[in-house]
Length: 177
Image: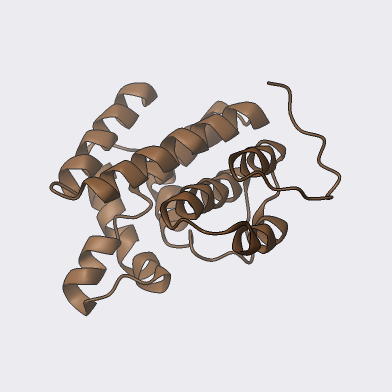
């Protein structure tokens, strides 16, 4: 299946998985859109972008089984429960094993901020933070330290500064718009 069609089918599967939960559906769609935008601005290769977009779509699928099993959905529980669900969704759509493994790795680590080992991982984390900052209505006093500690891509840093009107002196000169 063509990558674009695969991502569209995966989005449909993820939406159906979260049926009746518009907050989670909107969250995954926002993380996907922001991930795609950052990746395009950063000029990552098409293979990495495909893996990133698939991971962004399914990054939070561990929430539902974590809530069912444990009555909670902490980041650790999402990372624990998410890969199996992501694997099932992707294999049902015929994803290649290499793609499945990397997406499951990202789903299983998207709340782990040490040892980020690739552009796909970095961008997924940044996009999830940006959406969570907004959805959780966080103040800039909370956002600024996370920005300084987590954000590494030029596009992600720019978007965070613009979105939340952060005035930071980190040597960032913006991006071409």
